[in-house]
Image (cartoon, rainbow, N blue to C red):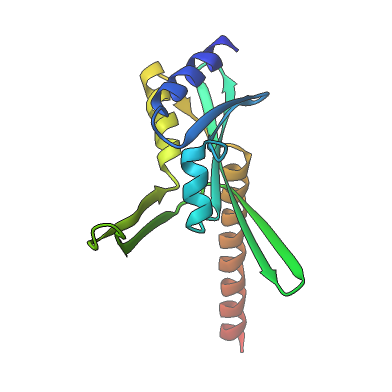
Length: 174
């Protein structure tokens, strides 16, 4: 699994200065938003950002890998004497974009300016992995979630065409 370590090290280098951290796993490694880093905890807590992205990088053999996106959404609430929490997870290929800009008044100068200017693209972590893999000559393959989604999609299309054909034939026979 030495090749996996080389890819992991390249991804770690590519993630420097970003909110991503690399964590070794039995299947390869994860590239995830590092919520333990104080720079990013303040941003997520203070501004109500509730999504955490992880890109699971599965090493499939020499020079082959797959990426599974995992989006965790967390929400909290308090009402009266109760606390609530909810969590949802999406796996597979996740596409998303968030942009948040807040304006405020500086208490010292009285000038209006940006208090928050935050942009997040779900694919930026995938891009870090893909750039590192391309440098090493690695090829990306589909993981189980993508293959499963493709099969379900094909079956749905075939069934839909079959239903429309059956309805069309029944209408002609009447």
